[in-house]
Length: 408
Image (cartoon, rainbow, N blue to C red; front, top):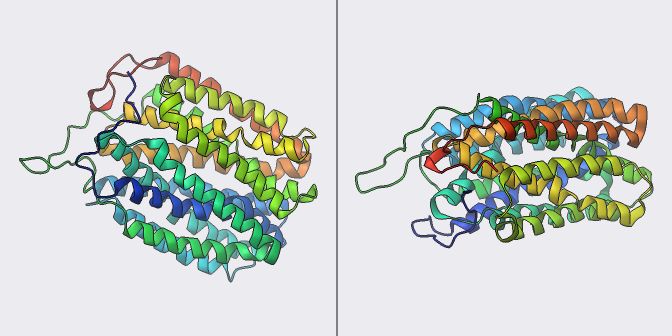
């Protein structure tokens, strides 16, 4: 049976755990609410070419392959994972301030790359803290996680308003302002102690850790396939705002497009415990990958305002359902003492495919325009095949923590 994501028991949890972790997700996703849709516009504002935009946006994804595993590894071995969050947020703020005074290609490339390394472990470590709450005290993953998505929408709408007033030049200062909030929420995050240690009458005792799953073929295929499907969003994040703007849509309309996807994502998180608990983790991941294939096939079509708005709602499936499935997968196969490392493993895989996708998308968009999205559909299809293969070869054995893994 799958471990439920929604149970009522909260005894023993830190004070206001749910609220503090929800705020922990709000701050970085407020940064993303500006950065994801508008940083490409900022680069366009600086006069970068399509190829240069692709290279700059690919660099932090590539460097996150260094920052994420190192930061996640350090978090699992630190006296408290929160220390890594504080370090990450402070250095990220410094780089964001430096971007406010950078205009050349090489300066932006280097500084944005450094930000990619520093910022990389923040969300995976926050995910590890949340999943620890799911494991120990039965918190509802989706209900807590959705507040980060809600913050993304709010900031996205603020970004559209700022873009209408100040243009692309507002991006770097706005990101710096929201990085200040990541420091504040990191300082107020719940302290759980060293990863895998739980208080007992005899003192703090670490649960026995089994063999690492990270090199097992089914684990690599499942995480890699899901990450490849997530990486297929690279062209959307890189060129969708530019494409919509050149199609004549206003900053407010572009913000609505991005917000529609996140509203759908929030609803999926909200309903996940009630409606998705009956669906296997494999079903959730495969469904998300399959919808991604269709999404990128449809995107280049003449859709109009309402068509693009509706298609953006598919993000509830291409991201949210797949993400929930992966969280269940990690709960089933990674013990608590490796929680941050497991989250970092998945995030590093996403960074790899997002870096490749972002780099390639610059050339694809330059050569084929919006029809380059067909290549993203092929990538998502390959991810679907990898996850299906993992499903077929997974061992019929107990998961981490002794829970029996449902092979369905």
